[in-house]
Amino acid sequence: MKKISLLILVAFGLFLACKGTHNSSDAKKLTVVFESKSNSTVSGTATFTEKKGVVTMVAKLAGLQTGLHAIHIHEKSDCSAPDGSSAGGHWNPTFKKHGKWGTGDYHKGDIGNFTADVAGNATVTFSTNEWCIGCGDTAKDILGKGLIVHQGSDDFTTQPSGNAGARVACSGLIK
Image (cartoon, rainbow, N blue to C red; front, side, top):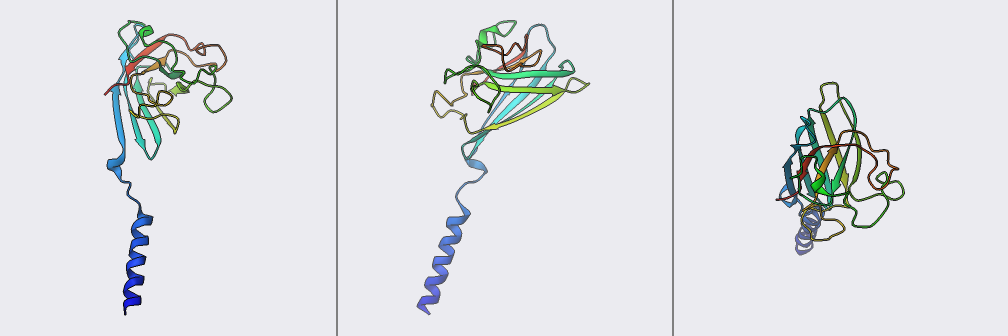
């Protein structure tokens, strides 16, 4: 009888260990609102969620011109300039050349291109384990940075910014 009770206790312990302790309350979340820049009508929000070491960004945008646009994380959360220039250049804590995420050199802020539909709407989803929300690691922490939407697309070649054109929306990544 003691052996059966011990086996049940061990099995129950293994069940709890395998189940894990992560739940939805373990996630960090940051939602920001875009400001129109460069005389555009672009609006929208971006939500960053960090769960189990992966940050997922979902940006929902409206008021864009139909076609390709770039989105990048920039150095500063300052969106005060009418053209968004106060956000500085691309966030590049590892001092790499500008490029396409996951291919050779790239800035940590080089998210990439997305397509706006004929109504000017777009949803951009991006996930990485190379970012964190408020962890304090200067090579990963997105807090205090700016999120910029560009008028054109990133060519992934032109240094240091990809020649993506005017900054049509900006949001500071602050809590």
